[in-house]
Image 1: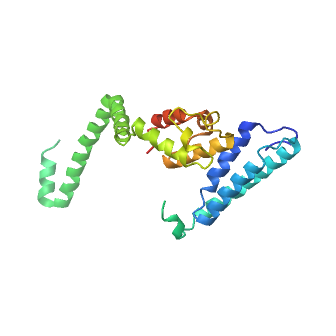
Image 2: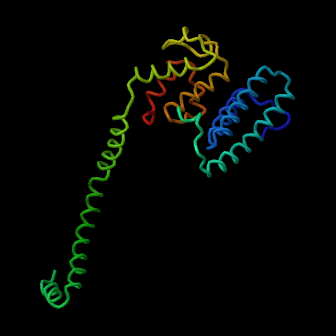
Image 3: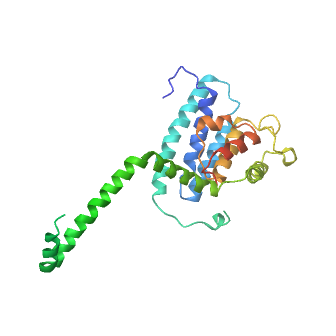
Amino acid sequence: MASKQVLPNRTYILHLYRSLLRASQKFSSYNFRDYAYRKIRDSYHVNKNETDSDRIIQLVGKAERELGVLKRQGYLNSLYSVDRLVVEEES
Amino acid sequence: MNRFVPETLFRLKPAGFSIFQQKNFIKPALTLLSSSNNIHSPKSKIIGTSQQRYYSAESGLSRQNIESRIIDIVKAFDKVDETKVNSEARFADDLGLDSLDTVEVVMNIEEDFSIEIPDKEADEIRSIKDAVDYIAKREDAH
């Protein structure tokens, strides 16, 4: 969606972040869910000070593709029930 | 209606009578329904929604309850200095959270109150007070 010239604005990037985090919670399997959440968080925090516009465009493109993957896989995963792990019992 | 017909039907065919009876029963019931709909339709709509609101208001949360829960969520966030958290604290200025952290805190609040906050409204939440106001507005929060 983002064309190669336009630098995505801050609001768009934050909305993408929220969509990614939300999509990560759709997994029914704890390991996938937790991995996706952590990975998104970490990647965003690592790159939060990025100023190079080419790099930002590249990263946003990556995030968009990953969001697609997450949505598909999260949905597929939610179709299958899995036993809750011991670590999940507390919540 | 013709009194003769049901009586003969009743004598000869009890099953037929019951069908006749059903027809007779359905007809007035339908006219009653449609007439009540015509006359009271705005009223019944109001009753419907007010009942729904009543139910959600029953499980409604008090402001203190919302506030203490939100404060707990914010305190539980690993980057927050617990001593700085109060009901007026702003995420960015008082608690030193950046925009990414704010998104995460708002997401945690969403999860705790089992609601989904649309992006536009989530962007407006910049302090604990904003969050409390928003949750208090949402009737489906619990």
